[in-house]
Amino acid sequence: MTLASLADAPAAAEWRSLVEKTLKGQPLDTLVSATAEGLPIAPLYLPGEGPRTALALPARDAERPWDLRAAVAHPDPARANADLLADLKGGAASALVRIDPTGAAGVAIGSAAGLAAALKDIILEIAPVALDAGFLGPQAADWLAGVARGSPSAKLNFHMDPLSALAAAGASPGPVESHLVSAATVAARLAARH
Image (cartoon, rainbow, N blue to C red):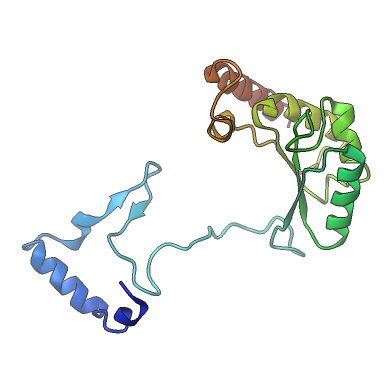
């Protein structure tokens, strides 16, 4: 299909008429399917119809109803902190810390103290912090919870997702089931604290 052919596309009424004719009297709704979550998927969406591309959720912050998340992956935690602070001062609304203890693909963090160094002077009640720690997600979530202790209204996103880590790495250091259990256990424990 070319862009020029779209100009000759049939109107909605014409399209529906042709589909109903093909369906031989069955209603057009028989072509509607659903996602695993039960959300309907129509066979065709015409301009001005269909689901929105973003959910109409209430804004977390009335002053800033959007989120521009700054990602940091510099191996040195002090440099990562300086980069995050500069991004937040420059207009970013939240931070994403990529953690890789080796420093090859993220901030070289291997403890709560290392994460605290990367988040030094960041006000967790104002700037939400998210983690991208791969298989270290549960351990990094504990570190972040420790850093945020004393800040009951801190906005934290732990992002413990061993399946995405498996997809990215192509292999798992140990049975993936154990990573799933660990993530679920830490998530339940952290949820019980709040």
